[in-house]
Every structure is written in structure tokens, then in C-alpha cells.
Length: 96
View (cartoon, rainbow, N blue to C red):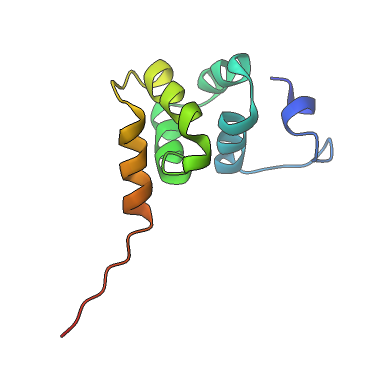
């Protein structure tokens, strides 16, 4: 993985947690970086982090569709992610 390219802002000996590493690689890595990510980490772990931290973020809509289709074998369209985004920011108010 070309860490100097996607982690350019970190010192060479810096340690980052798995969640940050996975999310940052999915967002800013190229295709080969993402493939390497799947060689290093469990697919379920990557998917859980992706769903929790990234899938509902409309800034990465096209990327999320590609990740879903190519890496998680999901048959989805962009509407799927728009609904996630809407649900993420939905405010629930209860009046008694």
C-alpha cells in the first residue's frame, strides 16, 4: 500500500487505529490500495466500518456505489445511499 500517498499528513512512525486506517483508505486510496486493504483486514470488519462511517455520507456517493458493487457484491443504486443519508440525519421527537 502506498502509505506515503494517502497518509502523507502523518509522520512515518505514526500509529493509527484500524477504523481510521480502513476509512481513510476507502476514501482516498486508489483501487489497488483498496484491494490491498481487503488482503490485510477481514471483509466483515471493513464492511461494518464502511456502513457505520461512510455509506451514509453523500459526499462519497459514487465511491460508495462502487465499493458496494465491487467489493461487497451488493446490487444497489445510488438511491440506497440517499436513503441511508436521510435516515442518518432524521430527528425523532416524542411528545407525551
